[in-house]
Length: 169
Ligand SMILES: [Zn+2]
Image 1 (cartoon, rainbow, N blue to C red):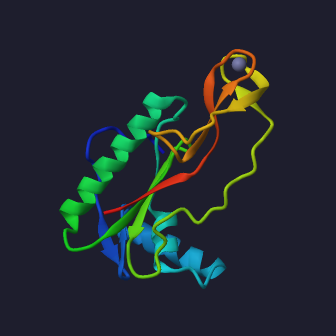
Image 2: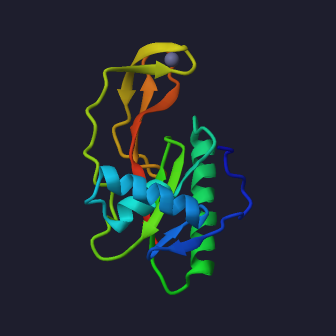
């Protein structure tokens, strides 16, 4: 799939009470397939899985800001198309995936994933090998969803793991 551009080229449709950003026939096919394997999937699971767009790789802060802008473009497009509805936008920061679902009762509005354990070593893009990392002592003010650290050898800043940014609109 092509990465999204900064342009607002979102198109939505409604089918089976769900809102999708892919053509209705394809969305309903995927919905049937998902419900076969996971019959207890809720509307937000179905919308969240089917409505996923791949973003360009995010390897530094500027890339992450780009993904935040993409999420804002999506939010504006949803507000314009469905001014009477509410949505949760899920931006998998650093994971290059953007998705959304309707914010109906029961739909999660915060990341339900548990915090991952800290790896002792991680790949340093500058050293181009696994190195020990020194965790930043405070949550990052701009991207607190990511665990920031500096390479103990070269000082390169990177993140060891990321969580999703959930935005309810
Ligand atoms: Zn390094």
